[in-house]
Amino acid sequence: MAVRPILKMGDPRLLQVSAPVAEFGTPHLLTLIADMEDTMRAAQGAGLAAPQVGVGSRVVIFGMERNPRYPQAEMVPYTVLVNPVLKAHWGRLEEDWEGCLSVPGMRGLVPRHRRLRYRGFDQHGKPIDREVAGFHARVVQHEVDHLDGVLYPTRIRDLSKFGFTEELFPGQDIQAD
Image 1 (cartoon, rainbow, N blue to C red):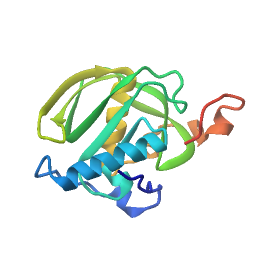
Image 2: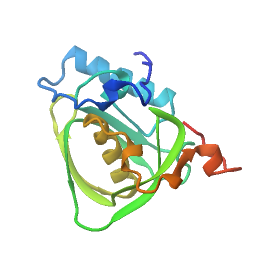
Image 3: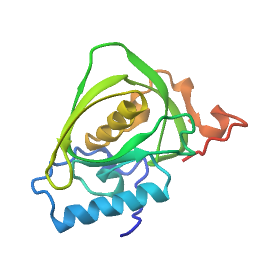
């Protein structure tokens, strides 16, 4: 379909709470999702939320096999998730490095739940209900945060663990954005 521009941190639309999707399978929704997939793949992202392309709807996509932005990460199945609901499993939070297509060139050490359950729907209204852990759980939490107007830098506990990728990881082959 089309690669859309990705909004950058500082754009006020990234701080808004997104509205639930009322109708599934519509041409508008299907075009949005196709464009989001093209945009995510072109940017080599692990996920993308509708607000990142300027649409205030509760839609996220995620998934990757091998990604130069996250060379050590395990595979995450491609998923379209509409109107997601997360339920974190009790337990300690785990910190790991995150980046974001809306915060290009930077990384931060972000605490997230290691395991969670997510529910929602695909683009046609078919229910999705999964329990996941590790990088998969991290990606889902990151993308769903976008639907609530939250960017990962606001979750960082220690700002000395936030900076430009090439400064944090000198000499390592990690793509910045």
